[in-house]
Amino acid sequence: VPGGNPQIKPELMVEHLKATGGKYVTRFPPEPNGFLHIGHAKAININFGFAKAHNGICNLRYDDTNPEAEEERYFESILDIIKWLGFTPSEVTYSSTHFQRLYELAIELIKKDKAYVCHCTGEEIQKHRGGPERGPRTACVHRDRPIAESLELFEKMKNGEFQEGEAILRMKMDLENGNPQFWDLVAYRVLKSSHHRTGSEWVIYPTYDYTHCLVDSFENITHSLCTVEFMQSRASYYWLCDALEVYKPVQWEYGRLNVTNTILSKRKIAELVNKGHVLDWDDPRLYTLPAIRRRGVPPQAINNFVHTLGVTKSDTVIEVAKLDAFIRDYLNETAPRLMGVINPIKVVIENLPENYEQILTVPNKPRDPSMGEHTIPFTREVWIDGTDFREVDDKDFFRLAPGKTVGLLNVPCPITCTKVTKDASGKVVELVARYEDTPGFKRPKTYIQWVAESPKHGSPVRLDEVRLFDRLFNHSNPQDKREVPGGYLSDVNPDSLTIEKGALVEVGLWDIMNRWAKSSESKTDYEAMRFQLTRIGYFCVDKESDLGDFKARPEASLKDTCKKIIINRTVSLQVSSAL
Ligand code: ATP
Ligand code: MG
Ligand code: MG
View 1: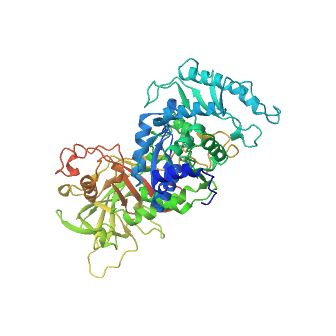
View 2 (view 1 turned 90 degrees about the horizontal axis):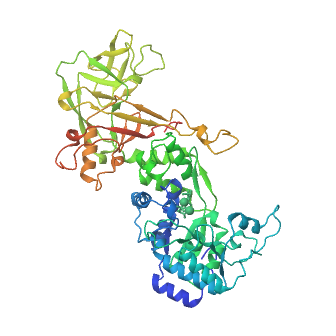
View 3 (view 1 turned 135 degrees about the horizontal axis):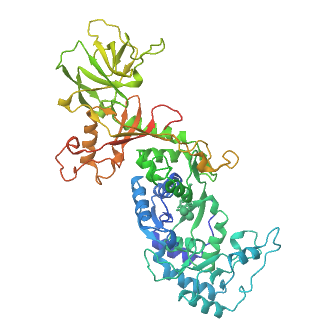
Protein backbone atom coordinates (compact mmCIF):
# COMPACT_ATOMS: atom_id res chain seq x y z
CA VAL A 1 0.00 0.00 0.00
CA PRO A 2 1.58 3.32 -1.03
CA GLY A 3 1.65 5.76 1.86
CA GLY A 4 2.39 2.99 4.30
CA ASN A 5 0.11 0.36 5.65
CA PRO A 6 -0.49 0.93 9.32
CA GLN A 7 0.11 -2.03 11.57
CA ILE A 8 -3.12 -3.88 12.16
CA LYS A 9 -3.57 -6.78 14.55
CA PRO A 10 -3.97 -9.98 12.50
CA GLU A 11 -7.27 -10.92 14.15
CA LEU A 12 -8.78 -7.51 13.29
CA MET A 13 -7.59 -7.90 9.71
CA VAL A 14 -9.19 -11.33 9.46
CA GLU A 15 -12.49 -9.91 10.64
CA HIS A 16 -12.20 -7.00 8.24
CA LEU A 17 -11.48 -9.26 5.29
CA LYS A 18 -14.45 -11.41 6.22
CA ALA A 19 -16.67 -8.34 6.06
CA THR A 20 -15.34 -6.92 2.80
CA GLY A 21 -14.30 -10.06 0.96
CA GLY A 22 -11.04 -8.26 0.27
CA LYS A 23 -12.76 -5.53 -1.74
CA TYR A 24 -11.75 -1.89 -1.57
CA VAL A 25 -14.25 0.22 0.33
CA THR A 26 -14.24 4.03 0.23
CA ARG A 27 -16.74 6.66 1.28
CA PHE A 28 -17.61 10.22 0.42
CA PRO A 29 -18.27 11.80 3.83
CA PRO A 30 -19.89 15.27 3.58
CA GLU A 31 -21.25 17.13 6.54
CA PRO A 32 -24.88 17.82 5.64
CA ASN A 33 -24.46 21.46 6.58
CA GLY A 34 -24.49 23.02 3.13
CA PHE A 35 -24.66 22.44 -0.59
CA LEU A 36 -21.81 20.69 -2.33
CA HIS A 37 -19.46 22.79 -4.45
CA ILE A 38 -16.99 22.30 -7.29
CA GLY A 39 -14.30 21.14 -4.83
CA HIS A 40 -16.56 18.32 -3.69
CA ALA A 41 -16.81 17.13 -7.29
CA LYS A 42 -13.14 16.24 -6.98
CA ALA A 43 -13.70 14.41 -3.68
CA ILE A 44 -16.64 12.51 -5.19
CA ASN A 45 -14.66 11.52 -8.28
CA ILE A 46 -11.70 10.40 -6.20
CA ASN A 47 -13.71 8.28 -3.77
CA PHE A 48 -16.07 6.70 -6.29
CA GLY A 49 -13.40 6.54 -9.00
CA PHE A 50 -10.77 4.87 -6.83
CA ALA A 51 -13.24 2.24 -5.62
CA LYS A 52 -14.48 1.58 -9.15
CA ALA A 53 -10.97 1.29 -10.57
CA HIS A 54 -10.31 -1.49 -8.07
CA ASN A 55 -13.65 -3.16 -8.43
CA GLY A 56 -14.58 -1.96 -4.97
CA ILE A 57 -17.49 -0.03 -3.50
CA CYS A 58 -18.07 3.51 -2.28
CA ASN A 59 -20.60 4.68 0.30
CA LEU A 60 -22.15 8.05 0.80
CA ARG A 61 -21.77 8.84 4.47
CA TYR A 62 -23.54 11.81 5.97
CA ASP A 63 -21.21 12.95 8.68
CA ASP A 64 -24.07 14.27 10.78
CA THR A 65 -22.59 15.00 14.17
CA ASN A 66 -23.32 18.76 14.24
CA PRO A 67 -27.10 18.89 14.72
CA GLU A 68 -27.15 22.68 14.81
CA ALA A 69 -25.90 23.16 11.26
CA GLU A 70 -27.73 20.29 9.57
CA GLU A 71 -30.86 20.61 7.52
CA GLU A 72 -32.99 18.13 5.61
CA ARG A 73 -32.62 20.05 2.33
CA TYR A 74 -28.84 19.52 2.45
CA PHE A 75 -29.23 15.77 2.86
CA GLU A 76 -31.51 15.65 -0.16
CA SER A 77 -29.41 17.93 -2.30
CA ILE A 78 -26.18 16.02 -1.61
CA LEU A 79 -27.53 12.65 -2.77
CA ASP A 80 -29.26 14.28 -5.70
CA ILE A 81 -26.03 15.91 -6.88
CA ILE A 82 -23.98 12.72 -6.48
CA LYS A 83 -26.47 10.88 -8.69
CA TRP A 84 -26.50 13.76 -11.14
CA LEU A 85 -22.71 13.47 -11.43
CA GLY A 86 -23.31 9.85 -12.40
CA PHE A 87 -22.37 8.00 -9.21
CA THR A 88 -24.42 5.57 -7.19
CA PRO A 89 -23.45 5.00 -3.58
CA SER A 90 -23.32 1.35 -2.62
CA GLU A 91 -24.88 2.35 0.64
CA VAL A 92 -26.08 5.57 2.19
CA THR A 93 -24.92 5.71 5.78
CA TYR A 94 -25.01 8.18 8.65
CA SER A 95 -22.50 8.75 11.42
CA SER A 96 -25.48 9.23 13.73
CA THR A 97 -26.46 5.57 13.25
CA HIS A 98 -23.48 4.78 15.44
CA PHE A 99 -24.15 7.20 18.30
CA GLN A 100 -24.74 4.36 20.80
CA ARG A 101 -21.66 2.42 19.76
CA LEU A 102 -19.52 5.55 19.78
CA TYR A 103 -20.77 6.30 23.28
CA GLU A 104 -19.93 2.81 24.48
CA LEU A 105 -16.45 3.09 23.03
CA ALA A 106 -16.00 6.41 24.80
CA ILE A 107 -16.67 4.63 28.10
CA GLU A 108 -14.17 2.00 27.04
CA LEU A 109 -11.64 4.73 26.35
CA ILE A 110 -12.12 6.24 29.81
CA LYS A 111 -11.70 2.79 31.36
CA LYS A 112 -8.41 2.42 29.49
CA ASP A 113 -7.36 5.74 31.07
CA LYS A 114 -7.28 7.28 27.58
CA ALA A 115 -10.03 9.85 28.09
CA TYR A 116 -11.20 12.18 30.84
CA VAL A 117 -13.95 14.62 31.55
CA CYS A 118 -12.67 18.19 31.54
CA HIS A 119 -14.31 21.47 32.58
CA CYS A 120 -11.90 23.89 30.98
CA THR A 121 -13.28 26.73 28.92
CA GLY A 122 -12.07 27.24 25.37
CA GLU A 123 -9.85 30.02 26.62
CA GLU A 124 -8.30 27.81 29.31
CA ILE A 125 -7.65 25.07 26.77
CA GLN A 126 -5.83 27.58 24.56
CA LYS A 127 -3.75 28.66 27.54
CA HIS A 128 -2.76 25.08 28.34
CA ARG A 129 -1.72 24.52 24.75
CA GLY A 130 1.13 26.99 25.32
CA GLY A 131 2.93 28.88 22.59
CA PRO A 132 5.42 31.70 22.07
CA GLU A 133 3.45 34.11 24.31
CA ARG A 134 1.77 31.64 26.59
CA GLY A 135 4.79 29.60 27.52
CA PRO A 136 5.07 25.83 27.75
CA ARG A 137 2.24 23.40 27.15
CA THR A 138 0.67 22.13 30.38
CA ALA A 139 -1.86 19.57 31.49
CA CYS A 140 -5.05 20.85 33.10
CA VAL A 141 -6.14 19.81 36.58
CA HIS A 142 -8.78 17.45 35.22
CA ARG A 143 -6.36 15.33 33.24
CA ASP A 144 -5.36 13.16 36.18
CA ARG A 145 -8.71 12.74 37.83
CA PRO A 146 -9.55 9.11 38.69
CA ILE A 147 -11.10 6.92 36.01
CA ALA A 148 -14.17 6.31 38.16
CA GLU A 149 -14.78 10.03 38.49
CA SER A 150 -14.61 10.55 34.71
CA LEU A 151 -16.98 7.64 34.19
CA GLU A 152 -19.46 9.15 36.61
CA LEU A 153 -19.17 12.62 35.10
CA PHE A 154 -19.49 11.34 31.54
CA GLU A 155 -22.68 9.58 32.59
CA LYS A 156 -23.91 12.90 33.97
CA MET A 157 -23.04 14.61 30.69
CA LYS A 158 -25.10 12.04 28.88
CA ASN A 159 -28.00 12.53 31.28
CA GLY A 160 -28.16 16.22 30.65
CA GLU A 161 -26.83 17.24 34.06
CA PHE A 162 -24.34 19.65 32.53
CA GLN A 163 -25.10 22.70 30.47
CA GLU A 164 -23.32 23.36 27.19
CA GLY A 165 -19.71 24.31 27.81
CA GLU A 166 -19.63 22.98 31.38
CA ALA A 167 -18.05 19.64 30.56
CA ILE A 168 -16.34 17.90 27.66
CA LEU A 169 -14.77 14.52 27.20
CA ARG A 170 -11.16 14.74 26.05
CA MET A 171 -8.88 12.05 24.74
CA LYS A 172 -5.76 11.59 26.86
CA MET A 173 -3.16 11.71 24.13
CA ASP A 174 0.43 12.99 24.22
CA LEU A 175 1.14 16.54 25.29
CA GLU A 176 4.85 16.04 24.54
CA ASN A 177 4.13 15.39 20.87
CA GLY A 178 4.89 18.29 18.49
CA ASN A 179 1.71 17.57 16.54
CA PRO A 180 -1.22 19.62 17.91
CA GLN A 181 -3.51 16.74 16.98
CA PHE A 182 -2.10 15.00 20.07
CA TRP A 183 -2.96 17.69 22.56
CA ASP A 184 -5.93 15.96 24.13
CA LEU A 185 -8.56 16.48 21.43
CA VAL A 186 -12.19 16.86 22.40
CA ALA A 187 -14.23 13.68 21.89
CA TYR A 188 -17.64 14.75 23.19
CA ARG A 189 -19.40 17.98 23.97
CA VAL A 190 -22.77 18.84 25.49
CA LEU A 191 -25.19 20.17 22.88
CA LYS A 192 -28.82 20.54 23.85
CA SER A 193 -30.08 20.59 20.30
CA SER A 194 -32.36 18.18 18.61
CA HIS A 195 -30.86 16.02 15.89
CA HIS A 196 -32.69 15.48 12.61
CA ARG A 197 -32.42 11.70 12.98
CA THR A 198 -32.08 10.98 16.68
CA GLY A 199 -34.30 13.81 17.91
CA SER A 200 -33.77 14.61 21.57
CA GLU A 201 -32.27 11.20 22.40
CA TRP A 202 -28.81 12.67 22.88
CA VAL A 203 -27.57 15.80 24.59
CA ILE A 204 -23.92 14.94 24.01
CA TYR A 205 -22.50 14.68 20.51
CA PRO A 206 -19.18 13.21 19.35
CA THR A 207 -16.70 15.46 17.52
CA TYR A 208 -15.30 14.99 14.04
CA ASP A 209 -11.93 13.88 15.44
CA TYR A 210 -13.54 11.20 17.54
CA THR A 211 -16.21 10.08 15.08
CA HIS A 212 -14.59 10.07 11.70
CA CYS A 213 -12.00 7.36 12.14
CA LEU A 214 -14.26 5.14 14.21
CA VAL A 215 -17.12 5.23 11.72
CA ASP A 216 -14.59 4.54 8.94
CA SER A 217 -13.53 1.55 11.02
CA PHE A 218 -17.11 0.32 11.67
CA GLU A 219 -17.87 0.56 7.94
CA ASN A 220 -14.71 -1.38 7.09
CA ILE A 221 -13.43 1.45 4.93
CA THR A 222 -10.16 0.29 3.39
CA HIS A 223 -8.95 3.70 2.21
CA SER A 224 -9.99 6.81 4.07
CA LEU A 225 -9.34 9.46 1.41
CA CYS A 226 -9.37 13.04 2.61
CA THR A 227 -7.98 16.47 1.83
CA VAL A 228 -4.51 17.61 2.86
CA GLU A 229 -5.61 19.74 5.79
CA PHE A 230 -6.12 16.42 7.57
CA MET A 231 -2.49 15.42 7.15
CA GLN A 232 -1.72 16.07 10.81
CA SER A 233 -4.92 14.29 11.79
CA ARG A 234 -3.68 11.07 10.27
CA ALA A 235 -1.66 10.29 13.40
CA SER A 236 -4.54 11.03 15.76
CA TYR A 237 -6.85 8.99 13.52
CA TYR A 238 -4.54 6.00 13.92
CA TRP A 239 -4.04 6.74 17.62
CA LEU A 240 -7.75 6.40 18.40
CA CYS A 241 -8.23 3.20 16.38
CA ASP A 242 -5.21 1.71 18.15
CA ALA A 243 -6.32 2.94 21.58
CA LEU A 244 -9.65 1.17 21.17
CA GLU A 245 -8.10 -1.81 19.38
CA VAL A 246 -10.47 -1.61 16.43
CA TYR A 247 -9.79 -2.20 12.73
CA LYS A 248 -7.77 0.68 11.31
CA PRO A 249 -8.24 1.95 7.73
CA VAL A 250 -5.43 3.64 5.79
CA GLN A 251 -5.71 7.39 5.44
CA TRP A 252 -4.50 9.05 2.24
CA GLU A 253 -4.61 12.74 1.51
CA TYR A 254 -5.15 14.63 -1.73
CA GLY A 255 -5.11 18.34 -2.55
CA ARG A 256 -8.18 20.54 -2.40
CA LEU A 257 -9.56 22.00 -5.59
CA ASN A 258 -10.48 25.64 -5.88
CA VAL A 259 -11.34 27.76 -8.90
CA THR A 260 -10.63 31.44 -9.52
CA ASN A 261 -13.13 34.32 -9.41
CA THR A 262 -15.40 32.65 -6.95
CA ILE A 263 -15.97 31.85 -3.29
CA LEU A 264 -16.87 28.43 -1.94
CA SER A 265 -17.18 29.14 1.76
CA LYS A 266 -20.68 28.47 3.04
CA ARG A 267 -20.76 31.47 5.34
CA LYS A 268 -19.72 33.81 2.55
CA ILE A 269 -22.16 32.40 0.03
CA ALA A 270 -24.89 32.80 2.64
CA GLU A 271 -23.94 36.46 2.88
CA LEU A 272 -24.09 36.88 -0.92
CA VAL A 273 -27.56 35.33 -0.89
CA ASN A 274 -28.82 37.33 2.10
CA LYS A 275 -27.56 40.63 0.72
CA GLY A 276 -29.17 39.96 -2.65
CA HIS A 277 -25.99 39.76 -4.71
CA VAL A 278 -27.14 36.43 -6.09
CA LEU A 279 -30.60 34.91 -6.52
CA ASP A 280 -30.03 31.91 -4.26
CA TRP A 281 -27.58 29.08 -3.46
CA ASP A 282 -28.08 27.75 -6.94
CA ASP A 283 -27.62 31.06 -8.71
CA PRO A 284 -25.83 30.12 -11.95
CA ARG A 285 -22.99 32.53 -11.17
CA LEU A 286 -21.96 30.52 -8.11
CA TYR A 287 -19.87 27.36 -8.06
CA THR A 288 -21.97 25.25 -5.79
CA LEU A 289 -22.84 22.09 -7.71
CA PRO A 290 -26.57 22.95 -7.76
CA ALA A 291 -25.60 26.33 -9.27
CA ILE A 292 -23.32 24.82 -11.89
CA ARG A 293 -26.05 22.35 -12.72
CA ARG A 294 -28.66 25.09 -13.05
CA ARG A 295 -26.36 26.97 -15.41
CA GLY A 296 -26.64 24.01 -17.75
CA VAL A 297 -23.18 22.53 -17.27
CA PRO A 298 -23.28 18.82 -18.15
CA PRO A 299 -22.02 16.58 -15.33
CA GLN A 300 -19.67 14.81 -17.75
CA ALA A 301 -17.86 18.11 -18.37
CA ILE A 302 -17.21 18.48 -14.64
CA ASN A 303 -15.97 14.92 -14.34
CA ASN A 304 -13.71 15.34 -17.38
CA PHE A 305 -12.33 18.53 -15.86
CA VAL A 306 -11.71 16.92 -12.48
CA HIS A 307 -9.98 13.92 -14.09
CA THR A 308 -7.35 16.08 -15.72
CA LEU A 309 -6.38 17.49 -12.33
CA GLY A 310 -5.12 14.11 -11.18
CA VAL A 311 -4.68 13.05 -7.58
CA THR A 312 -1.78 14.92 -6.09
CA LYS A 313 -1.25 16.33 -2.64
CA SER A 314 -1.04 19.95 -3.76
CA ASP A 315 -3.99 22.26 -3.28
CA THR A 316 -4.81 23.79 -6.63
CA VAL A 317 -6.51 26.97 -7.74
CA ILE A 318 -7.62 26.42 -11.29
CA GLU A 319 -8.50 29.19 -13.73
CA VAL A 320 -12.22 29.12 -14.17
CA ALA A 321 -11.57 29.47 -17.93
CA LYS A 322 -10.17 25.95 -17.85
CA LEU A 323 -13.46 24.57 -16.59
CA ASP A 324 -15.25 26.59 -19.28
CA ALA A 325 -13.09 24.93 -21.93
CA PHE A 326 -14.22 21.49 -20.76
CA ILE A 327 -17.83 22.64 -20.82
CA ARG A 328 -17.46 23.96 -24.39
CA ASP A 329 -15.75 20.79 -25.55
CA TYR A 330 -18.48 18.59 -24.21
CA LEU A 331 -21.36 20.75 -25.43
CA ASN A 332 -19.75 21.18 -28.83
CA GLU A 333 -20.05 17.43 -29.30
CA THR A 334 -23.48 16.94 -27.78
CA ALA A 335 -25.65 20.04 -27.98
CA PRO A 336 -28.07 20.44 -30.89
CA ARG A 337 -27.91 23.77 -32.73
CA LEU A 338 -30.75 26.23 -32.99
CA MET A 339 -31.03 29.67 -34.49
CA GLY A 340 -32.16 32.50 -32.28
CA VAL A 341 -31.89 36.26 -32.04
CA ILE A 342 -31.58 38.18 -28.81
CA ASN A 343 -32.27 41.70 -30.13
CA PRO A 344 -34.54 41.06 -33.09
CA ILE A 345 -34.95 43.31 -36.12
CA LYS A 346 -37.46 42.35 -38.77
CA VAL A 347 -36.36 41.95 -42.38
CA VAL A 348 -38.97 41.93 -45.16
CA ILE A 349 -37.68 40.19 -48.27
CA GLU A 350 -39.58 42.28 -50.81
CA ASN A 351 -39.17 40.11 -53.90
CA LEU A 352 -40.57 36.96 -52.28
CA PRO A 353 -44.36 36.48 -52.68
CA GLU A 354 -46.65 37.46 -49.79
CA ASN A 355 -47.39 33.86 -48.72
CA TYR A 356 -44.00 32.47 -49.61
CA GLU A 357 -42.96 29.50 -47.55
CA GLN A 358 -40.19 27.00 -47.95
CA ILE A 359 -39.66 24.20 -45.47
CA LEU A 360 -35.95 23.74 -44.88
CA THR A 361 -34.42 20.62 -43.42
CA VAL A 362 -31.55 21.63 -41.21
CA PRO A 363 -29.01 19.48 -39.39
CA ASN A 364 -29.15 19.41 -35.60
CA LYS A 365 -25.39 19.72 -35.83
CA PRO A 366 -23.55 20.62 -39.02
CA ARG A 367 -21.42 17.83 -40.48
CA ASP A 368 -22.72 15.32 -37.94
CA PRO A 369 -25.60 13.31 -39.41
CA SER A 370 -25.69 11.13 -36.28
CA MET A 371 -27.28 14.07 -34.45
CA GLY A 372 -30.27 14.08 -36.83
CA GLU A 373 -32.11 16.98 -38.40
CA HIS A 374 -35.27 19.04 -38.07
CA THR A 375 -37.36 21.35 -40.22
CA ILE A 376 -37.95 25.08 -40.06
CA PRO A 377 -39.98 27.41 -42.25
CA PHE A 378 -38.36 30.11 -44.37
CA THR A 379 -40.78 32.94 -45.16
CA ARG A 380 -40.93 36.42 -46.60
CA GLU A 381 -40.43 38.02 -43.20
CA VAL A 382 -37.59 36.98 -40.96
CA TRP A 383 -35.92 38.28 -37.81
CA ILE A 384 -32.20 38.83 -37.55
CA ASP A 385 -30.12 39.99 -34.60
CA GLY A 386 -29.62 43.72 -34.15
CA THR A 387 -25.89 43.17 -33.78
CA ASP A 388 -25.75 41.75 -37.32
CA PHE A 389 -26.92 45.04 -38.86
CA ARG A 390 -25.13 48.38 -39.07
CA GLU A 391 -26.65 51.47 -40.49
CA VAL A 392 -23.22 52.95 -41.09
CA ASP A 393 -21.19 50.44 -43.01
CA ASP A 394 -17.51 49.74 -42.58
CA LYS A 395 -15.21 47.88 -44.95
CA ASP A 396 -14.34 45.38 -42.23
CA PHE A 397 -18.00 44.65 -41.48
CA PHE A 398 -19.27 41.62 -43.39
CA ARG A 399 -22.84 41.40 -42.21
CA LEU A 400 -25.91 43.42 -43.13
CA ALA A 401 -25.78 47.17 -43.94
CA PRO A 402 -27.58 49.31 -46.51
CA GLY A 403 -26.67 47.96 -49.95
CA LYS A 404 -24.72 45.07 -48.47
CA THR A 405 -25.28 41.35 -48.92
CA VAL A 406 -25.21 38.63 -46.27
CA GLY A 407 -26.05 34.95 -46.18
CA LEU A 408 -28.85 33.53 -44.05
CA LEU A 409 -27.77 30.23 -42.51
CA ASN A 410 -29.36 27.20 -44.20
CA VAL A 411 -31.11 29.38 -46.80
CA PRO A 412 -30.16 28.77 -50.46
CA CYS A 413 -29.63 32.41 -51.51
CA PRO A 414 -28.31 35.53 -49.73
CA ILE A 415 -30.11 38.82 -49.14
CA THR A 416 -29.13 42.44 -49.84
CA CYS A 417 -30.43 45.27 -47.69
CA THR A 418 -32.34 47.74 -49.88
CA LYS A 419 -34.09 49.99 -47.38
CA VAL A 420 -34.05 50.92 -43.70
CA THR A 421 -37.27 51.97 -41.96
CA LYS A 422 -37.05 54.04 -38.79
CA ASP A 423 -39.56 55.24 -36.24
CA ALA A 424 -40.05 58.88 -35.22
CA SER A 425 -37.16 58.67 -32.78
CA GLY A 426 -34.79 57.48 -35.47
CA LYS A 427 -34.64 53.90 -34.21
CA VAL A 428 -34.36 51.24 -36.90
CA VAL A 429 -37.58 49.21 -36.85
CA GLU A 430 -37.49 47.24 -40.06
CA LEU A 431 -35.23 46.40 -42.95
CA VAL A 432 -36.22 45.65 -46.48
CA ALA A 433 -34.08 43.22 -48.44
CA ARG A 434 -33.85 41.55 -51.83
CA TYR A 435 -33.53 37.78 -52.21
CA GLU A 436 -30.57 37.27 -54.52
CA ASP A 437 -31.72 34.21 -56.46
CA THR A 438 -30.27 35.09 -59.84
CA PRO A 439 -28.01 32.24 -60.97
CA GLY A 440 -24.32 32.85 -60.39
CA PHE A 441 -24.82 35.48 -57.68
CA LYS A 442 -21.59 35.81 -55.68
CA ARG A 443 -21.41 33.78 -52.47
CA PRO A 444 -21.51 36.02 -49.39
CA LYS A 445 -18.58 36.15 -46.97
CA THR A 446 -20.72 35.71 -43.87
CA TYR A 447 -23.82 33.79 -42.86
CA ILE A 448 -25.99 34.98 -40.01
CA GLN A 449 -28.75 33.30 -38.02
CA TRP A 450 -32.38 34.26 -38.47
CA VAL A 451 -35.85 33.19 -37.37
CA ALA A 452 -38.94 33.10 -39.61
CA GLU A 453 -42.02 35.20 -38.91
CA SER A 454 -44.64 32.58 -39.61
CA PRO A 455 -47.58 32.34 -37.20
CA LYS A 456 -48.86 29.39 -39.18
CA HIS A 457 -45.79 27.39 -38.19
CA GLY A 458 -45.65 28.79 -34.68
CA SER A 459 -42.53 30.75 -35.51
CA PRO A 460 -40.87 32.48 -33.82
CA VAL A 461 -40.88 31.02 -30.32
CA ARG A 462 -40.82 33.99 -27.95
CA LEU A 463 -38.59 33.67 -24.92
CA ASP A 464 -39.53 35.45 -21.73
CA GLU A 465 -35.95 35.84 -20.56
CA VAL A 466 -32.45 35.11 -21.71
CA ARG A 467 -30.06 35.23 -18.76
CA LEU A 468 -26.46 36.02 -19.60
CA PHE A 469 -23.88 35.62 -16.89
CA ASP A 470 -20.48 37.10 -16.32
CA ARG A 471 -17.97 36.55 -13.51
CA LEU A 472 -19.48 37.27 -10.11
CA PHE A 473 -16.17 38.65 -8.84
CA ASN A 474 -13.78 40.93 -10.66
CA HIS A 475 -10.65 39.54 -9.08
CA SER A 476 -9.15 36.13 -9.50
CA ASN A 477 -9.07 35.82 -5.71
CA PRO A 478 -11.76 38.03 -4.22
CA GLN A 479 -10.55 37.05 -0.76
CA ASP A 480 -7.06 38.45 -1.26
CA LYS A 481 -6.75 41.23 1.32
CA ARG A 482 -4.08 43.10 -0.63
CA GLU A 483 -5.76 43.01 -4.01
CA VAL A 484 -9.24 43.51 -2.64
CA PRO A 485 -8.84 45.64 0.50
CA GLY A 486 -12.59 46.24 0.69
CA GLY A 487 -13.31 42.54 1.07
CA TYR A 488 -15.05 40.12 -1.27
CA LEU A 489 -18.41 41.90 -1.11
CA SER A 490 -16.77 45.00 -2.58
CA ASP A 491 -15.49 42.88 -5.46
CA VAL A 492 -18.90 41.76 -6.72
CA ASN A 493 -19.30 42.57 -10.42
CA PRO A 494 -22.51 44.64 -10.67
CA ASP A 495 -22.95 43.58 -14.30
CA SER A 496 -22.63 39.86 -13.74
CA LEU A 497 -26.25 39.20 -14.71
CA THR A 498 -27.89 40.56 -17.86
CA ILE A 499 -31.51 39.69 -18.52
CA GLU A 500 -32.65 40.05 -22.12
CA LYS A 501 -36.36 40.06 -22.84
CA GLY A 502 -37.85 39.68 -26.28
CA ALA A 503 -35.49 37.11 -27.75
CA LEU A 504 -36.86 34.85 -30.47
CA VAL A 505 -35.86 31.30 -31.40
CA GLU A 506 -36.75 28.91 -34.14
CA VAL A 507 -39.32 26.14 -33.74
CA GLY A 508 -36.60 23.51 -33.36
CA LEU A 509 -36.70 24.36 -29.65
CA TRP A 510 -39.88 22.28 -29.33
CA ASP A 511 -38.10 19.19 -30.64
CA ILE A 512 -35.52 19.51 -27.90
CA MET A 513 -38.10 20.16 -25.21
CA ASN A 514 -40.42 17.36 -26.32
CA ARG A 515 -37.57 14.89 -26.49
CA TRP A 516 -36.63 15.87 -22.96
CA ALA A 517 -40.22 15.50 -21.71
CA LYS A 518 -40.31 11.95 -23.11
CA SER A 519 -36.96 10.84 -21.79
CA SER A 520 -36.55 12.64 -18.49
CA GLU A 521 -37.43 10.58 -15.46
CA SER A 522 -37.73 13.37 -12.95
CA LYS A 523 -39.27 15.94 -15.31
CA THR A 524 -37.77 18.56 -13.03
CA ASP A 525 -34.30 18.64 -14.57
CA TYR A 526 -35.10 21.55 -16.90
CA GLU A 527 -31.37 22.25 -17.20
CA ALA A 528 -31.00 19.02 -19.19
CA MET A 529 -32.63 20.81 -22.13
CA ARG A 530 -29.38 22.06 -23.61
CA PHE A 531 -28.67 23.57 -27.00
CA GLN A 532 -26.40 25.92 -28.83
CA LEU A 533 -27.80 29.17 -30.13
CA THR A 534 -25.69 29.48 -33.23
CA ARG A 535 -23.07 32.21 -32.95
CA ILE A 536 -24.24 33.15 -29.41
CA GLY A 537 -23.43 30.37 -26.98
CA TYR A 538 -24.65 27.27 -25.21
CA PHE A 539 -27.89 27.52 -23.29
CA CYS A 540 -30.26 25.52 -21.15
CA VAL A 541 -33.79 25.98 -19.86
CA ASP A 542 -33.95 27.52 -16.39
CA LYS A 543 -36.01 26.00 -13.60
CA GLU A 544 -38.00 29.23 -13.22
CA SER A 545 -39.65 28.54 -16.57
CA ASP A 546 -43.29 27.51 -16.50
CA LEU A 547 -43.75 24.52 -18.77
CA GLY A 548 -47.44 24.19 -17.88
CA ASP A 549 -49.25 20.92 -17.23
CA PHE A 550 -47.12 18.83 -19.56
CA LYS A 551 -46.83 16.08 -16.97
CA ALA A 552 -50.58 15.59 -16.95
CA ARG A 553 -50.72 15.62 -20.76
CA PRO A 554 -48.06 13.20 -21.93
CA GLU A 555 -49.34 13.34 -25.53
CA ALA A 556 -49.24 17.12 -25.73
CA SER A 557 -46.35 19.03 -27.22
CA LEU A 558 -44.62 21.48 -24.94
CA LYS A 559 -45.51 23.98 -27.63
CA ASP A 560 -49.08 23.79 -26.35
CA THR A 561 -48.37 23.73 -22.62
CA CYS A 562 -45.48 26.17 -22.15
CA LYS A 563 -46.35 29.41 -20.41
CA LYS A 564 -42.97 30.93 -19.71
CA ILE A 565 -39.51 30.13 -21.04
CA ILE A 566 -36.34 31.37 -19.41
CA ILE A 567 -32.97 30.25 -20.70
CA ASN A 568 -29.50 30.51 -19.18
CA ARG A 569 -26.32 30.93 -21.10
CA THR A 570 -24.09 28.13 -19.84
CA VAL A 571 -21.00 29.38 -21.63
CA SER A 572 -20.24 31.59 -24.61
CA LEU A 573 -18.80 30.08 -27.77
CA GLN A 574 -15.56 31.95 -27.63
CA VAL A 575 -13.04 32.26 -24.89
CA SER A 576 -13.68 35.63 -23.31
CA SER A 577 -14.20 37.05 -19.87
CA ALA A 578 -17.94 36.49 -20.25
CA LEU A 579 -19.41 33.11 -19.44
P1 ATP B 1 -16.42 23.09 2.96
O1 ATP B 1 -16.26 23.76 4.27
O2 ATP B 1 -15.86 23.84 1.81
O3 ATP B 1 -17.81 22.59 2.73
P2 ATP B 1 -15.55 20.63 4.10
O4 ATP B 1 -14.24 19.94 4.09
O5 ATP B 1 -16.06 21.10 5.40
O6 ATP B 1 -15.51 21.81 3.03
P3 ATP B 1 -17.23 18.34 3.88
O7 ATP B 1 -18.68 18.40 3.70
O8 ATP B 1 -16.72 17.93 5.18
O9 ATP B 1 -16.68 19.77 3.46
O10 ATP B 1 -16.52 17.54 2.73
C1 ATP B 1 -16.75 16.23 2.34
C2 ATP B 1 -15.51 15.73 1.66
O11 ATP B 1 -15.15 16.55 0.57
C3 ATP B 1 -14.32 15.74 2.60
O12 ATP B 1 -13.60 14.54 2.42
C4 ATP B 1 -13.53 16.94 2.17
O13 ATP B 1 -12.18 16.77 2.46
C5 ATP B 1 -13.81 16.98 0.67
N1 ATP B 1 -13.66 18.33 0.16
C6 ATP B 1 -14.22 19.46 0.64
N2 ATP B 1 -13.83 20.54 -0.04
C7 ATP B 1 -13.00 20.10 -1.02
C8 ATP B 1 -12.23 20.74 -2.06
N3 ATP B 1 -12.27 22.06 -2.24
N4 ATP B 1 -11.48 19.97 -2.87
C9 ATP B 1 -11.44 18.63 -2.71
N5 ATP B 1 -12.13 17.97 -1.75
C10 ATP B 1 -12.89 18.68 -0.90
MG1 MG C 1 -15.80 19.19 7.02
MG1 MG D 1 -18.00 21.10 5.49
